[in-house]
Image (tube, rainbow, N blue to C red; front, side, top):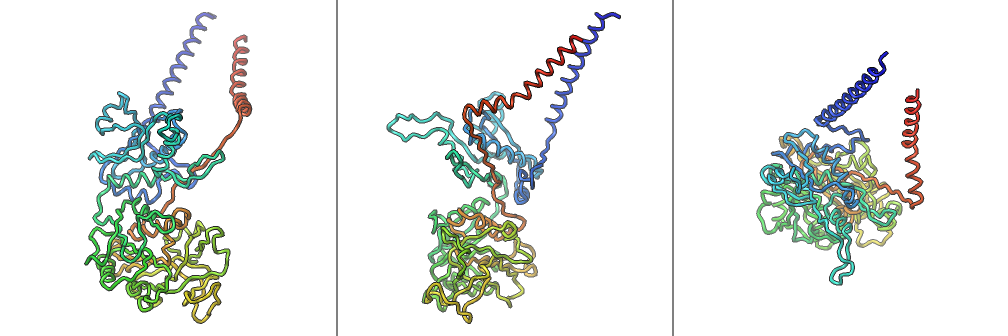
Length: 533
C-alpha cells in the first residue's frame, strides 16, 4: 500500500469537501437573499399589518419609498436602537404587503459612495432621519435628530442637557411611542408603539388620492368646546389629533354666518354647546346631514337653564327626533360608589348590549374596557321612529343608576321618585343612519352620533382612558364611513430590565462561557486521540 499516495488523496478529499461545503453555503445564502417573504409566527399575528391598514393601503396611487438614514451602531442611544428594532418589524410588514403599488424600504448612508445615486435622485440631505417620498418628489420627514456632543456642563449661557436626553425628547415628540411609564431605574420608557398608524397616515398623506370631502368642522358661537384648546379638562385637542391622524383637516365654523356647510366638509362636530341653536342654524345642519349625506357628531352635557325650557337639547331636539333619537334633560345618578373612580370621581360606563353588539363597541365589550365620563344625560332611541333610519343605543349606564328629573332643584344624594325618575340601565350614546332603502351605498347615507356628555371625549379622558380612546376612534371611523375599519391601538412594547453589579456580571459571563469552552476542549481532545490512533 502506497501510504504517501493515500495521504495525498486524503488531503484532496478534505480540500474538495471543504470547497463544496463553502460553495453550498454561499449558494444557499444567495438563494435565500432572493426570497422576498414575510411570515408572522407571533401570537395573534401581532407583527402583521392590521385589517384597517391593509384596506387603506389600497388608496395609494403611486409607489412609495421609505428611507432610513440612521446608521445602526452599537454606540447609538438605547432609545434609537429600540426605535430601529420596532420600526424594522413594522416596515417589513409594509414592504411585504402586496398592495397595488409597492412600498420600498431603503436603509442608506448618505455619505457612502455606494448610495450616492439614490441620494442624488431623491435629494436626500438629512442624516439620522426617517423620510417617506414618492417619485413625484412629494416628501415627508417622519423623524430626525441631531447626533451632536453633549452641551458644555460648565457653560453659564445654557441649561445642561445630555445628547441622550435631547434625542429621547425627539422620539417622544415624534409620536412613535406613547404611554411612557417610569421604569425601575427611574427612566421613562414607552409601553406602546404607534409606528403602524404613523407610517400609514404619512403614506396616505403623500401618495393617496385626495378626497374632496377631507375637512372636519367644529361649530363655534354657542360656547362649544374648542379643538385647539389643550387644557386637560376643558380642551378637545386630543379629539382633533385623532381626526388628523386619519388625514382629516380640522377647522372651526359659525353656522349663523353661512347658508350651507362648505362642500369639503365630511363631518360636522358639535361639542358641549352652552347656548341655543337658532332655526337658521338647524336648517343648515338638517340640509347637510339629510341632503348632502354628511355626518354629525353631537355631544350634549346635562343642563337645566330657564331659557331652555321650551328649547330642550339647546334647540337640537327636533332634528334629533327626526333621526329617531331623544336627548332628555335629565341627569344620570348612580348611588353605588363602586361605579366611580376612587381618585378622580369619574363615572365608569361598562354596560353594553347583550345580543347583537354594534361593531363600534364590540372590541370594548369583548376587552371589558371601561369608559370614563363626568355628568351624563340620557340619549335614547325613539321606539316608534321612522323605518327610514337605523337607530342603535350602544352604551348604557349601570343597572343601579337612575335618570333624575328636575335635578337642579333636588338635594344630593337624592330620594328616588319612581314616578318621574327613570330606572337604569339608561342609554347614554346612540347612533342613527339612513337605511339602505333610502340610499344606494354607505357613502350616500347621512349619519348622526350623539353623546350624553362632552366629557367622554375631552383631553383628560382621551389621554387617561383606553376605552374612551377606542370609542372615539370607532365613532369617527363610523362617521367617516370607513365601515371596514376597526380602531386599533398601538402595539404593546414589553419592557425588560436586567440589573447586576460587576461581580454578578462576571458570574454570568463565566456561566454562559462554560458550554462552548467545554465543547471546544472536548473536540480538541477527541481529535488528538484520533490523530494518535
